[in-house]
Each structure stands twice: as C-alpha cells, then as structure tokens.
Image (tube, rainbow, N blue to C red; front, side, top):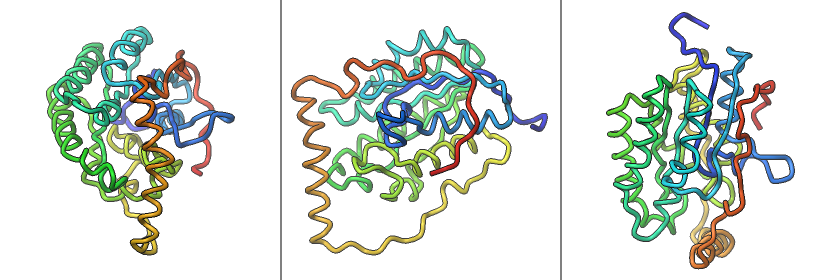
Length: 265
C-alpha cells in the first residue's frame, strides 16, 4: 500500500437491507452483500482489518440513527458506511428533509471522531422498476440533499444516479429492490474507487453487454408478475404496519476479522 493510500483497521457498516446484503446469498447460507465485499477488498491490503455490519433490513433512516449510531460509535471505527433512506422514499408523505437530517446527524457524529465516512446516492428507480417511476422526483430530491450534506462534512459520496449501468436489470435481483450478486460486487467496487483503495478503478460503471429487446406483451407480463410477487406483498406489510425487519438483529454486531476474499459470482 502506498504512503498516500488510506489505511483502515476498523470498518463498521450501518444501514438497511442493501447493506445487510439481501440479494447476495440466501437465508440458509447467509447474506454477503457489498459491505462484506468491500471489507474483503480492504483486507487484501490490511489483513488485520476488523469489520462489523449493523445493518438491518426494513429500517428507516431515523431507525438506523436511533438503533445503530451509538453501537457503531462504541466500536471506534476509522471507516464507516452510512446508507439509508430508500425505505423512507417508498412511504407516502415522506419528508426528505427529515430523512436527510437523520443521515446528516450520523455524518456529523462519525466525522467528529476522525473516521472516514462513505455514503451513496440512489439510482433511478423508475428505470429499474417502471411502475415505481412516480418516486423519481423523491429520489432526485433526496440525492441532492445527500450530496449537499456530504459536502458540508467531508463525506465521500458514490453518485450512482447518473450511471446508466446501475439501472441494468442484471444488477438487480428479481424483487428489483435489492442488488444481485453482480450488483453488490459493482457497488463494492464503486466504494473502493471512491475511498480510494489500491487497484480500484472505474470499471464498475462500464455498461454491460446489450440485452435482447423485450416486446411490449412480454414486458407487460413481467411487470404484472413483479407487482403481484413483490410490490403487492410490500404494500400489504405497510397496511398491516409490519416490516421485513421485525424481530431481526444485525448479522455481524461485533468487530471481527475478515475471512479471505471470495470469488465474484
């Protein structure tokens, strides 16, 4: 590692299902995800790296702040990733200013300790899931607020929204809410470039080979299937006041050594 490269010894990830790793693994074998992959990348240069992942699926930004901020600070990280807000955007009447206030409070708390803080903007959800295109103005608004808050506090931002590759369907799992293994791998690579880590580059943003065109009838069937299989159950949980994270706890609440990097699937 060169003298100008960052050295991280204690990495803590906070957030929701994307940081927990949903879409990259399963309940039987465990969830890997971009944060685990980033930790593995860092460990190639820093074998003594310790890593904790406090993220829990379904959490709103305010819940991430209330439940994960204090435990994360207690672990005294020198690198923290803070990614939350998409669950808020999907709820009626979301207050993006309040979401940003929760994110910014975490930026302030972590940067005050001297830790490097990493965050993301969100991709164009309307291109990933056309039935959800009405959420695009909210995504634009929150992204602008995240960029501004990050600039105020020296937080590293990976700006996913302008990158066409982030809306490629192969980057997303069947539910279109969580990244696929390929998507998680590219998110980790984007984070590595932003930090920046040795050997990282912008290859993560390169477009994938073109897909064969899909006709309108088949596309309509696909959208209907997605609504019935994923959007419908999600809305039903909201009506019932339930969350996918009910009863869940962090998968890796303590700092532990990172195992050898696994091959990209």
